Image (cartoon, rainbow, N blue to C red):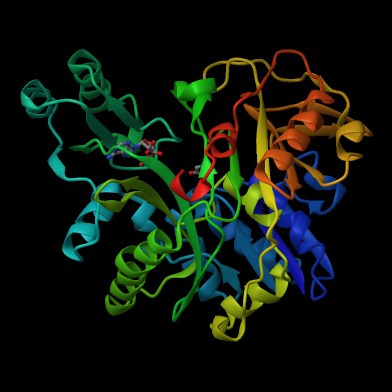
Length: 430
Ligand code: AMP
Ligand code: GLY
């Protein structure tokens, strides 16, 4: 098979890396890719906002299967566009992708189907109505812009003045553009977060290994929300009882309801969960794989991803079994200093070979540009340094050993990725 991966981040590098190992795959292209990806795949320039040009590209390259990384093309309907041209693609239809594209659509769906989620306090389009509501609620509360806002559309807050300010920026000044026309206010849930991603062919599903992301910029979960500063995965991250509850109360009813609405889901579906004292509840859906969760997940894949994705495209996933390495994996994101706020780019990255030479390490590139044999930073998140080990602690040590071999000026990374997981003696209780 000739494969096209769409996207340019660490998630896409991890997919390319794994797909290059597939016995069924003869060549991988990536649109547009990045400096690191260009070592393994042929990168082609692309505008991800132009889905018909992406279909033309797949046709021109005679691609057998396209895999979509980021949400925007899916929400824009890339799968429908490819289906019209009889081009095979992994990703949900535009209708299904609304689960990520509209938080209000997702919330109404969850409530309609009795799937556990945070209680709604209100949906608003007018700034005065929303300001009035936030005056009278008890805190903490969560405010969410309805549409895609590049990770900036959610505020979890204890502070009335922060809530009022968010309402004003969203509905008053319209700072969030088209994603910010409506505001959802909901209950703040307490507990530990879990990323639970499944692969569905429209008939059945197979769960990937669960992972934990670290969303805040600084150690101790302080600072601004980011796309994700690191992730880990290991055996026992959730107990068998919680795992069963997630499948039975959340995943199965979601996929059954979508199928029943003539909206069978084909592709990766990411359940962002809060494990509360009253059981797991849905915080959000993503219609794609997570980043950096994917880097931690591919490191544990003991199966041929090309074969499994072909089975999804053929709607024949039931013949597949995903076999996972019992080893733990840890991905530490190295970012530009200042991310997720302002930062400089164009810094030379040194030590990549020394890091990659360590056993059990893969360095996935997110925001890099290659010039001959040199690499330069080109965005906020730069690398996802990923390691495996017999234990979570061993994987964590190896990942940080590799991180310390990589230099670029103003680099920033969290020192506590997977630390809490390592500290909890019985990880089933984590
Ligand atoms: P989202 O964009 O919906 O993924 O939200 C981003 C982050 O906000 C999540 O990963 C959680 O950390 C947090 N969050 C969202 N909804 C809630 C909620 N109802 N209660 C507590 N935290 C939340
Ligand atoms: N790491 C969170 C996400 O991909 O949405």
